[in-house]
Length: 254
Image (cartoon, rainbow, N blue to C red; front, side, top):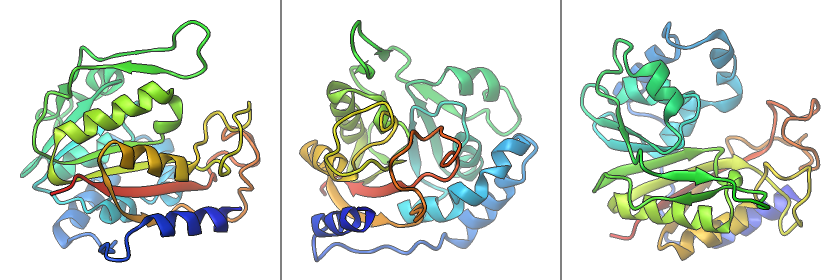
């Protein structure tokens, strides 16, 4: 099944699309390696590095240390603790939507003074009777960003919420800007059930994000897990920490 999904993704990419290097620049790699061993990170966060492969993932998306980067829905700040130190000297980091924990836990720490929190008026809620979250926001408060990233959030939102997330990302990016999205893999066109509620069909994600105006640039098999049969809930003992995840790179047309 996953091989079929990968083939479907490949067919969605234009034959003329540029496959970019997954090797980070020397400066970014050095800063990222330093951030990865920082005292700001917990032992549990460090333990996840082997599985989440942050250096390779951010290199795939094309992160540079002079970029303006927006992280959508940063949650507990696993990637925030890596992105901010990389961008702190030359670039700009913006956390947008669902930022309470990083604002409370990181904003006053040394090295995080320049971290900016935006879209604080955005509203996320699970409406009565709904299974997934809705999202309401006018904009992200940033223009001409180089990159918008969101990690394992796409599956949490309703059709409306995902469309709004994609619109906000599109509006905030400069022409040619990158939208990087990563999430747990669901079987293609499988109806929703209790086991796949935190998984998402990558082919459906591609269609939705392209419908928002983006161009699919590339996908990565960095987080392919052969022994995840896409059957169990991502928190189940047999797959937790070892889920198959899709990693998709889009750009705003120039």
